[in-house]
Length: 463
Image (cartoon, rainbow, N blue to C red):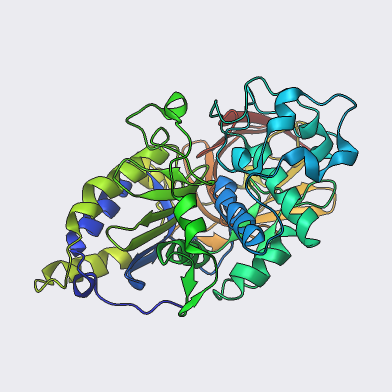
């Protein structure tokens, strides 16, 4: 656990953090957990109920930065070099005539997203490794940046091949245990039992902060040099020109290192994941900012950090601590608002009318994944076979569901109920509006963020 101090004692004016928090609230960008470190000391921390820093959180592509760190340890252990060719690790999986550009691809090309692919290959079949090695590589490796999650998976496969250990086991030995990271971190795996690498890691926000501090300290921890400082330097070097990806003035077009993005402010770099998972490392300011969130505009979060927090960092302690109390109050008032509070909807305490009570059969293959719903006096129950998720009808506070990873608030609207569920191990929130009719129920749903369509309608009939 990090030692904590008031921001001003560490040379950070609280007002900048307050402005950042206020802007996130104004723009309805829902943060879940946040830690801000200066010189290894925690100057601001918050969890936004029902999320809690005690819970693991899905990282999506922030997983890539952990995977590249494992590659760094394998290089340090003499098990591989960044100049090694990928095909040499898996000769048994190659086609009779591999693509010429595939034969040129190196570990460094995969680390820097310069594999030469024109589009990302599909992860398919019982061996993702075979699928990648048989994919067509349009450009010469090293000449064309393309964000490639499948390439990160291949890095995980190489680490497992050369170490004889699963990526997570190796990372725990080399990084996670020495840094005191959570003991229950887990990684999704492919059909061949290899960590998915480019996504699928689940950690706590403090684990993200520790990774950032480890990079800020150039691979040192508790006075010991765990990972060569040259690797840390190379990881934060903009090897790839990615202006074709995000534009020259973008935080996604400012250069790419070893599974880390370069940022618009000079020397700042970061790992990030879909819908707002961030490990931002600011060497000049000696700061780390770790955030889990569920946002649809990742750039707005970064822009707010650059605009509000960076100008408030000074070299030494700040005598004026007048902003510290306001920040403390702000950090105590961080619950995620229910949708009706943000949207100004007319609602009341949830109450089930007698005519609504009963069981309903839902349309098959619906986005909720349930085929039945029960409406009771104090709860809504979704069912599929023996699986049940029970949502208590509580208005004023987030209440954990039963049989799910969700917390829920509920309200009564004109024609039915509104359920706002936060899936606390993920970035996702679901808003369900249940309109009851004499013959059934119509459920209009939407997600806060997602890769596909964000809203849907499900019909159910009374049984």
